Image (cartoon, rainbow, N blue to C red; front, top):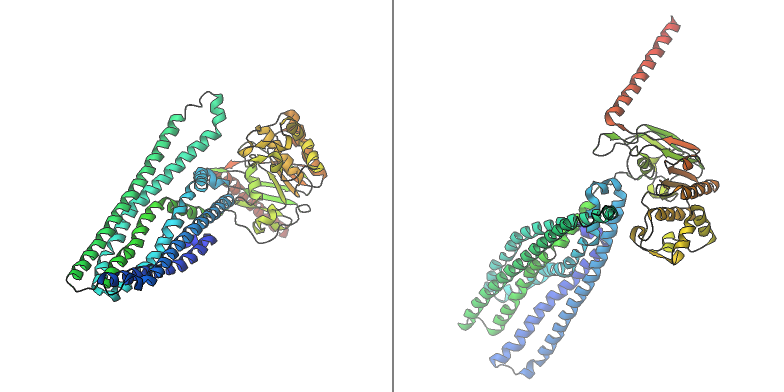
Length: 576
């Protein structure tokens, strides 16, 4: 990441406002620094030389106190607003990463990106706060205070200005050399954090299975090793940051001392007056300080900068299913036609689905049937514009699915995936509606009313992330009930009875029947006979390998060519 990455300004509106504030207050701060040094010299030198008494310069001291208070106030405003701007920017970047990850789709997340994305939005981005609060203000002080103090020193005593200009490049040179090592340590630390996060997520997702097998304590050693590795890399990053700060502090102190010695010798020899000497000695540290602080704070915020780079890399991942511009046709009156649809599985020699053709009429119940891995869920994902097809076509009415703007399509779809989204809160909050006769009827149809009766606080029972506190089957019925409260014209149910017994499967069937009677089109991915008996259309979904798919295409072309040749022969025969 650059010292001020334009991508950050582009992605975060609050960052742009903060930069404008820094430009304004940085300029004011530079003027106050110069004024403070000038006032101290102007008030102290005549008193020391005996030209004036303290009472004669007391007004300068009063102005100096006001300048000092103004600097304190500006520093407070910059830091306070910096904290707010950092929190807002982090929130915006988190939202953008989550939204973009959802837009990119589950296939990208399944390629080892889930854990890294979770780590990025939960912990890593918090390290961006020092960048805003500490680093950026010093960066703008380098652009304002340092050049203005150098200009004033040059016009006061050009020899001292030359000495400062010679010493000044030492700090950025060492800052670059140390910064490269710090960036490497920060990258390793973030990678270790993501590896630890991925292992913990995998462990938590499979903890119930491990506990059932009596192996829940087995991964403890692996997690401990990963935790120790993360701690070691964190300490290495901190060690380099502290050492770099010490080096930069030493260089700034040494450079200031060289200028002070040079000024002191000339003052002792009478070649430089007390006013100019004091002014130069006080301005010299102010010229070095912002650059020194930039180096120190850069290393302190290196972890956040690394996380921001990961944000931009994530946001640069192209969305596979590009959205069209046309509004979706009315799904309550438009047929969905699937024509020779094929989707190549990434990284595998598999086509799932392969050459799928079907028609789903409005107000029909269509069941996608086929073995696991045949492409049933993939077919739904293509219909929802979550992934791209490899070949074939899907049309809604007379409009190709690729020409439809996705959000206008989603507004007409209620989708219950295999793993429905359930957030921490009460059961009623997850429903998104207040208790009403419609909600009670939906719960009765899906059998969720019996679940509510068993819960201690009924609809007000608190559940955890992902539905913790409910069984898998209860979570499925919760999601199905939620879908039936305010269903859209098209309702898609992905294995709604997968975790239910025969009795509760009948409740799902009642729900599907109710949706059909209400005029909704229902697409169900199912294996159970109870659901299939309700189907107006059963669509058999099959998979194949890429080689066999090519062979099928070749055979189709050959048959077409044979047919064309036969037509030509027949025509010639009639002509004769």
